[in-house]
Every structure is written in structure tokens, then in C-alpha cells.
Image (cartoon, rainbow, N blue to C red; front, side, top):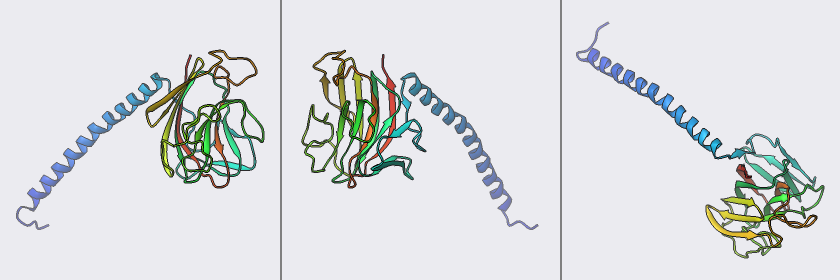
Length: 227
């Protein structure tokens, strides 16, 4: 084989660069894995648990056949059709919930907490955190429906926002996109009155599909149980 002057040297230098690059990558890979593991352990230490796996609705149940919830191609919970509510089937009392929510223009939805299971109807015994930027219903996102209502949305339509809801000892704190908007104190106190809706009760988290014009989506659903 005939080599032009300098070809062997050039090939040798190229091979040295490749070996150095491979060595650097070999060193970086274990470090990356350790960092990811550390982040995971840190999250577990803080008590946050994902309650939606991005693949199916295991652990969740629909309460009505008029509408439908499904997992879309982006790994999100999406709603379509008429009235339907998707319940997370563990009952909770004191907890924090973080959830990313999307609502379309003129769409309406909600995130319920402390809601008793109900068949083929609107939930009535829990607290609905409204999801509505531009629907004709004047009660907008961040409201506790029929209790503490706002008429301007902190989030625009056709965009994602994050609800962070903290429920503990007769109080509910609501954050949107990291900003605390208010803390609602149950007028009946920590334990409330049996048989009447109050923050001291146990119940489910539920997601709402409101009507055929509404197309809500949900992702990154994390739960932290509190004492």
C-alpha cells in the first residue's frame, strides 16, 4: 500500500483523538449515572411519588361513560367527549399534589381533591380546583369552585401550568406556577363536622372532562403524603 507523505502521521493523530474521546465518554457515563441516581434518591427522600406512569391508567378509574380519558402519544392523560371524571383510587387526607395541566381555548376542566367516589355524575362531596382560562363559565383557574372564586385566570389557554395543592389539618394552600395564591382555612376547623364537606375528610384526587368542547391534558402527577 502506498501512502502519501504525512498520511500515516495524520491517521495516527486522528486515531489518538478518537481514543481520547472514547476515554472521556467512558469516564462521563458513570458520572452521569451517579448524578441521575442521586437526583432520584433525593426525590424519594422528599417523599414525592409519581401516581401516573405515562403509559396507561393503572390506579385510576373513570366514573362515567359520556366522556373518556386516555393516554395520548405524548404520554399525557387526555380527556374528550362529555362529562367524565377520572379518579385516583387511593383515598387520601393530608397530602401535597403537583400536576401539570393544559386546557384549550374555551375549554373547561378541574382537579378535585378529597372527593368521594360517585357513579355517573358530577362529584359533589370534594373540592374542585377549577381549570378554565376562557370558557363561558366565569369561574376561572385557581378557584375552589363554589367556595373561593376568581374571575380572571392566572394562566392563558392553550398553555401548560402547574398546580401545587397542599391539604393539611383543615387548610388548603394553592399555588400556580410556583406562586402561592392563597391558603383557604376550613371554617369548621381541622376535623370539621361528620357528613358535611370539609378539608379534614378523606377522599380521592379526580380529573374532570367537562364537555365535548373541552380538551384537557395532564402530566407529571406527583403525590406526597403528609402526617
